[in-house]
Image (cartoon, rainbow over all chains, first blue to last red; front, top):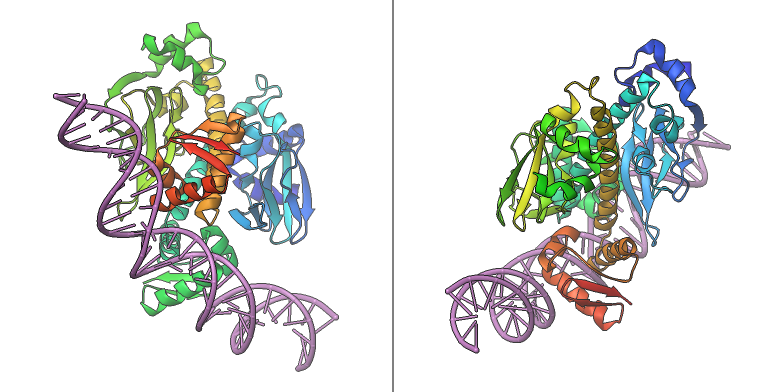
Length: 219
Length: 219
DNA sequence: TAAAGTCTGTTGAATTTTCAACAAAAGGAG
DNA sequence: CTCCTTTTGTTGAAAATTCAACAGACTTTA
């Protein structure tokens, strides 16, 4: 676990927790690390929502499948990010989503009950953890707002442009890379892939943007 | 404020806080109540995200307007529910949404800084409030998941049926009322109102459901 | 390096959604 | 009760999305 210390320190869940206390605390919380190869399932839909996950290396996605088998891409997860915490904290018994390793991953698991319920009066770090968890959930809620801002647009073009403008604002630049390939972007925007490609082509011709692979430039 | 005590007690933000401490605490937090007539604006897009709102009476909605002026209905707020907390907790400077009174409303406002930052080591209720806030945000995140489950469907019919099945599950019955009129439902599902009406008509003819005003029955 | 597999852009046809306009129904005010 | 306003359902034409299929570019693997 030590080799991931730098990533762990960046995790918002551990803000304002001293480095010398961190490892001790993780042991106390019963944290453990597992490795997953590409395309393997980290959490699967319907399994108990007992553990909070923290991505230590690699790249994963939160996805949901509807009853027609359509894949719905909910979020991209990057190292030091927390996932599946909302379900554990909200006492949802089983996960309504799956988490899939897109690249080989190392994941740290912490039993949510150890964060929320055990000795919360005696260990000072529990209070800090809960405060950090609240901050993290607030940030997640904001991300969902942004997502809904996108999907609430009615046309492929507007969805794409809303997404790209969000990314440009985040990057503070009009040229930036996105973490999706075309199919994933289509899934995220909830549009048809071929229609998306066509729309990108049109926008290029109109001189609104430039796109090479996953690098986009707004003009 | 006292006349709303029963509603305030139901607010998840005050779970496990004793009734005799509640009023004292609200005074300490600087909570105050305002009245809003129908169609008045409780919070407006772009204003500072300083206050957390708690609806004490009436009915309100969280809405967002895009640059074409389309109204996007994010959530319905009912008495004892908390709103705008995510923006305050996530340190978002200005609100990206508006809150509108649909019926005459009474709203309690609490400065979020008083919950998050003041004397958090000395007053025991602060820790409980933060824990409750975390629970509340986790629940909100789940609601957004459900919302995205709906809007990620591609057709009006699937969106409608996904929504109705969620409501049926919540109500634990195949007959239930929804808190929207047709236009609001269309906004929530992000579909065209006339197309929605047509789809409801078809589903009735097919014997899949029955609908009278805002009471739906799945058959 | 060759072969196999994956990703992307393009097309046209089928299906859906959107839009605008109107009439019927329901609700509210006086 | 009647008038006026709002909500709901209906329609057909226009526009957009989806779908399936394919070819070329790019990657990966053997």
